[in-house]
Image (cartoon, rainbow, N blue to C red):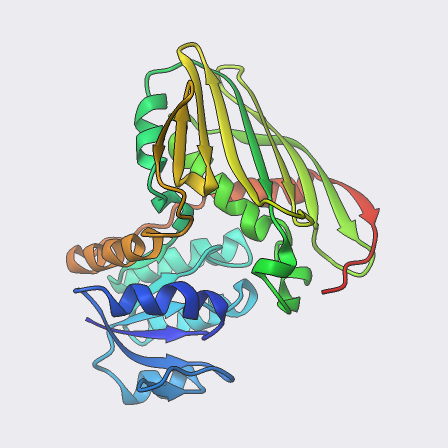
Length: 307
């Protein structure tokens, strides 16, 4: 199937383009971007022009920032195209619900992707936890924003999510591996004086069976990057490391330390499957947790951030 990639930035070039190029399911037929392009691929600066001139392109994959994503997605759906959404799927939950309704009414596929759920050991962690009694779960998600999001000013503006842009990856794993749903009960948000979104956060959650669930997120990490989820159960301790690439159960390690490897190819394989059967996948639980954290969060002003 032919796919067009909209928004040619770092994540598109680092992950989407290789995943599409190496997939037996997809042909990267065009791009849409005001600034970026890919050698040998037809480039447009306007999505409407692409939709009008390339009816053979059935799928639009959106890598633009969250705030403008809704308009792009609705435009694609109105033109009868299936839509794939980079995480988070939108700037608000209401937008995402509207997109799902529009796709359903048009009989089109839409996919809210959560790439971290496709990390190598997430499925194994979910299976191991399925019949265990959880006592405590702790998320520690600390990375250097300057390394992973250089010059991306939109993440500090309303709708950009700040530290929850990477933090939502952890929450997408948690909502996948736990057999029950959790919800936010409290949050502390550190917001730089010159920003609109948090650079760090601490969250606490309600677990239906009373387990102690919490998370620490920080975008000011020096040295080693930490993407870790520890689950203490009645039958031992499971730890996912490197964003889900490694799993340790009571000292026994499985997997290989290769963050992001395989994640985007699996996303595109799933999109191909959704389109083939007319399916839709708009799991919004990770975004709901972030939205609730922003609603309940106690805000603390911290030092200005300068990229």
